[in-house]
Length: 136
Image 1: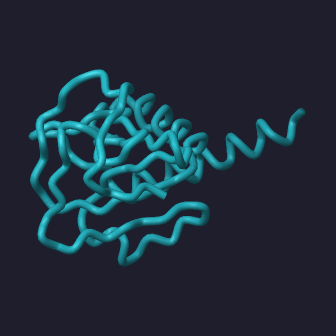
Image 2 (image 1 turned 90 degrees about the horizontal axis):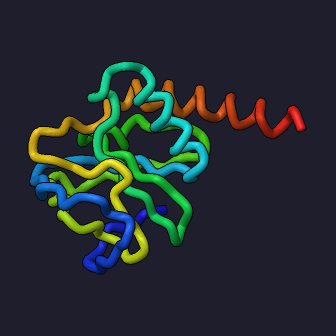
């Protein structure tokens, strides 16, 4: 699971995004499923379907930034949704966890990922992974 802390130091950040100061929750999933979900969301044609995504290489997870309150009703098996304290989580330009990097960096005007859209993409990704693993 991604833990938002003060350590930084990623070599995977391709750009220097603007810090975002607004409330968010964080959905964490295994990296394989998360990467499939990102592909599904980006292939959907709506480039705003997926917001900022953090990759934690040490834990092999992806973290999707979602609207505050998502954690209250999040029940997707194999994932977790971490609630912020409601005062707004400042998303730093550098990834907040040692060994992590922004797969899709935040920007001032970038929306977070819609939880319903993310849920559907994660479900589809799980089915694709299951099919791929069972065919061989």
